[in-house]
Image (cartoon, rainbow, N blue to C red; front, side):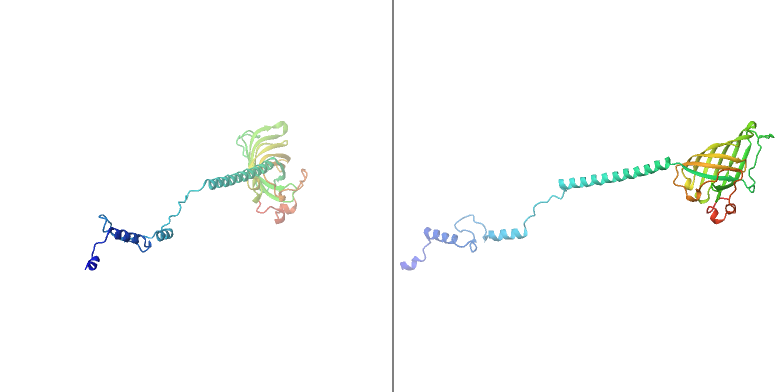
Length: 284
């Protein structure tokens, strides 16, 4: 009877202690955290998480990347600034070098003097000159106007170049020199090559110099002076230009000039303006 009741006795403190020790000695994976019936404030039972599994999943799925700075570093800024400065210096050098060459060429052109020789011949087939006596006096007097246009030939008299065209205003009659002083404004036309304009005193009794005031075509930017040598007034005049500010003149305008004399005449081919003896599209 005593033996049968022994199994119904309440567990002793010793047995509780051993049971508790046995539970805590279980492997950590199989241990269940539950409510302790002997502790009044126990929490709801739940599985104890595995630290190794948590660390593995954290490393695989929730690991944060180290923060990165998207701003350029100081070294990259220095490299960019150096490249910009080098490019800027190269551009400035090219600009200065080009400007120097242009200026050098400009000074060379401006300093170079080119001679051009032409003959102006009145062949009495253009109704030139027209003498307008605005002074209404019998002798040449101040204010008389003389419009004119004559044929223009090369200095060697082998090529028809074009024409002259302009106006002379009588300034002074000089009876003791049997001549007149005019203020002249006129141009020399060279076909497709352009023209030269001159202005100044035209003396019928001696050599005179007029200013070259400009030009067009190959004579654009021309300046200098021209010597007017009267041969037979008003039929033959020889001009020598001293031109500055223009590029090298076309070869067909140049050539060794024939010495001025009252007997000089253009070649028959030049007079007839044959293709080989005339400028292309020469002014007529």
